Length: 429
Ligand SMILES: *Cc1c(COP(=O)(O)O)cnc(C)c1O
Image 1 (cartoon, helix red, strand yellow):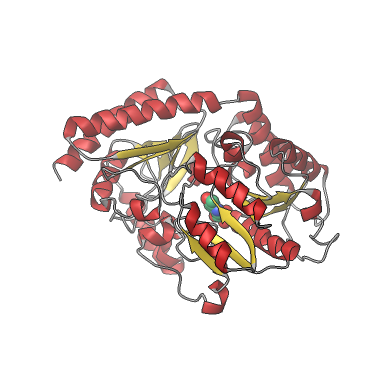
Image 2: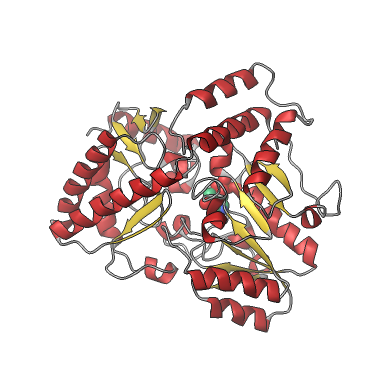
């Protein structure tokens, strides 16, 4: 496979863009080599500027659950475009999307749309503080909640890939109210709640994607729900990645829990910049204009983004692909494990719904410490072999791969061939 045009654009991009990317996860820093530039995509395939075609398992880091350029979504966007791009006033589309979202999440009476997952989380945290009058937030190491100051500690994939403990430019004061607990370890949360009276909320990815896929044990997630209720601490489920992906009602539906505040993004915007936070009426009425918690956005509820969101969610509802995702993910797991066994490479595969990834480690991966024990060199070898055999993967050991509804049996066959070759490369590394 040749990457000539990508190399050219990369060099050109370096002049006026930082690292030639607009998000560090897109740089191929940890796997070596330079980022690939994309030209276009359709269905389950993505094509780079050199004309190389890949099965896309990045899917824009989750949003493109229907594959690229779904017909109904494309038509809804075109229709909306003809009416105008942004008005600075309310539209019917916002009401429609709000109803679809609130119907999907039983704990949610009202929702506020914003422009990204980061914005959703930072607003949710402000809301938790406004509602409880408390300041501290418990977060789990390895969970990523966007790039605002208070959440940029022990924040998973992006930082882990670049081996950064946190971010420069974040003052100590900004993270002094952030308490770090260990995923799948209820005692580590209990300890914080025992020692701190001033805790507003516990925030988590109900299933993680940002240290790779890690599932909560039943005891952990149910225990966390009970514990937070007992202590009058809000539970924030950051479902920016899992919302409408794990199930229509997010990971919460599959895990059988209800958060006090839910954060959404990615799939909900169908590829456009949309985020949301929602909760019960009582909690949401703290938000301006009804309450004293301020949060605003010039482009929030943008009509094109709303049209993309509504049509994506309606399509998803109609297709109801979740059982099928489960089957496909099981097949992919089998393919990975079989190849690993054939070439005697130690891997562990974690998956949940349409999120899956192998870790190059023998042991179970249940938290960030486990994830960090993986052999990232093996992953790099695997990654480039997969690219060269036509499978586009996130360039990091600590990211989930994503499935879309458009994957064909031929895609799975080609994926399987790529995995076999890649695993052989890893074994001979
Ligand atoms: C992607 C992600 C975010 C951040 O969303 P952006 O749209 O990139 O700001 C927050 N939380 C989780 C769990 C995510 O996966």
